[in-house]
Length: 231
Image (cartoon, rainbow, N blue to C red):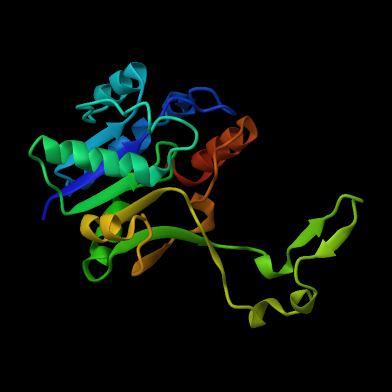
């Protein structure tokens, strides 16, 4: 079976400019998922999909392949991750390279490890896809909303007084990677096809990085949880 890792790294980040190559703990953040993917030794190709020559140069310096740049069509704010992945698979096919599995990896994933990717691949054997998720805490069933009058209201008043032990756990997409059988992904036009296996991640490794504050929190968590670990 042939497997490709695609790290998606367009250059148009608005809230944190050049987020995908910004220094995280002293090196470009994109270098972390590149290193994790390369160290697994399970991928036939580790490539970066980007619209930027600068990003491409940095990716190549850390060992990734960038055989072509992403099209303008799939580099704007409205293009989906699926669009970008489909484009890469199509471009490789036109060059005579066909893959059976794809691992789409987000560039701002410093908590990703080779062990996670290897285990996810093992879980893919009897499934169409594997997606990292983390459990909501506290339960999302207790969510509150704030209306235009600045008044709090429960999202569902009937669930507000439920005990946590009586609530079915709910999970959110960690935004780290998607491991898919390409045939199922293309057939269903999604990175989360019907038979997607939940790869549960410890909350200490879950961190959105969309603002400067998020970045600071991520670096603190990295120092606390990751600096003593091996990939």
